[in-house]
Length: 465
Image 1 (cartoon, one colour):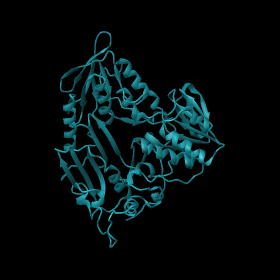
Image 2: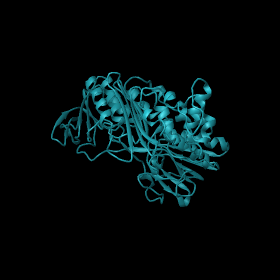
Image 3: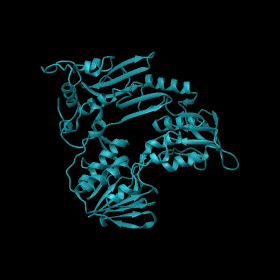
Image 4: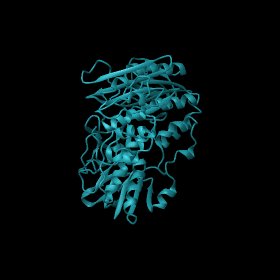
């Protein structure tokens, strides 16, 4: 049996581990488009900022592959798929046959149609290669424009600021972190930027990268007509599933590769996982790309298990983010941007204390938690996430979810005639934790619900409470 895995990031690592638990003899071949082992992409901004050394970027060392008998083809990328012949086409036209194939080819940065965007001095920021290219320019860059105020844009802006570069952020929409924050919490983020001395422009877009006679960047022109001088531009407006190599293969693609709950595509013996796929969103009840590191790992683990004869099922996921920049911390998940009083189908509860720097917001629909935002004091993120995962009925304590009382106090209620939870013993903490988890996950539960990110989405049975 030959297992071929296209891509070499976290979903690939998970798939290798899952395959080897069930098949210690089958051949595993990894197609790696980069000349390095799997590494932690979320850490590259920390490395640029000087906070993380290069040796900490690697997610797995070469010994990981060697110990599991994995052959890695470095500097090779998937260029095409011939499912009727059971083979893939690699860089340079080389062809490789497979018995089982996993597509873990990730996503590619979206580059908007900006005049002059192609050329030196303009970079996306999603890989080590991008990071090294930017780092090589730092001695010459005094001013940089970051296009996009999302997660990648904000972390890159912070890293450049820490390296002594003057940064201006340009965002098409009217707020910072527009995909995850509502108007009120985004205003807090703006204050953090102002306090740090970082400029930003909202509700405007870059239409041209201006260059001098040598082709070097000298600034950008905005749709409003404003000109911002700079020597470099970071394009951070999001990523798209990397489906181009799969065109003409017959595989079902919408925005990403469509998979079932086994992470299998419509093509026989072809699976997919990670940022390239559209998988089930627990909150929306539909398939869509959710490009998150923990979900990519879970999908890779399930795909690898099923490729080797297992019967694992992916129960879905939802967007959850945690980021900190310029001494501003935010955790959010699900339908976090729903504004109070705008949509009748949702109840929005908000607690805000400017003096203490605390903002909490939950979005409730059908008496279930559908989303949240927490600023600065983010210790409740795990419990809120657990409530979303479990689909627990929160009607008895929804008004207390954002209040200053502790979560144990909020849950100290008699539900359905059960004995109230006193939280005076570890037993009561475990009872609370069990109520937050699908039934088949309870064996993973230890003392507190903080392990939600580690244990969810491996089995199928969902608890109804």
